[in-house]
Length: 290
Image 1 (cartoon, rainbow, N blue to C red):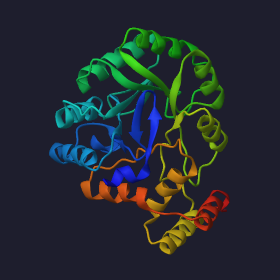
Image 2: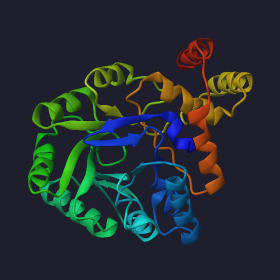
Image 3: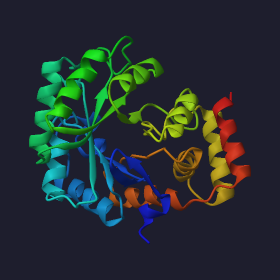
Image 4: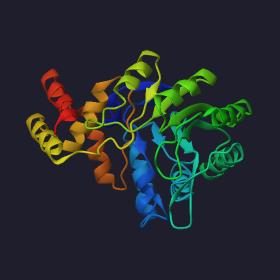
């Protein structure tokens, strides 16, 4: 059995994907801007992810911009039949690498075409609408105009499935009232549990939840407690944090990223970390650690 397969699978639209996926953000330059330092090594990580059994890769054309998607195409095209590529639109980069909102219907349409071109696809498996303000913060308010634009692209056959990212519960509900949403990609980890209710609600409806920043945001005391529990179960803190997410709910799909093959295998090994009820209870307590 390949390592990634030990995490099981979950439905993402009409696709079945490994719950342990891979996030390609770190394959471009620093802060996901500019070309990678070593393109050959970046391509090697992508190939190693597939060799390990991963069937879910998360990307975006605003990583680089364009750099990461081109690397994916160069490394993996023609794509295996079981590989699902998930991308994000709704943002763009300025000349200094800053993040700008880009979610008018015209901008969303152009972003879909850019992703298609750079990934070498005729249709995108899943497109997440990235909800944001002028920086990387969440924008309040309706997402109806943006969701309708994606629905038009779906009807044209350019987008197979629609997801939403960085969205409030109200925005998720609004989007779901308009189209079938197959995944929600929001901030979530052991230390950041604001989305607990949303995770559970989506699980009841068979919708994937994809946490970003799955390993960050820990205060010193929280990190100390995580390290203590990790030592007890014989794994690294990083592996235990990911294993907690896999056990937290069956609809959680992981997309941790790295630009190192060695680090990739370390991440994938988290799928094989067994957490008993005592460990889960202790890990749950990290969220309220002062």
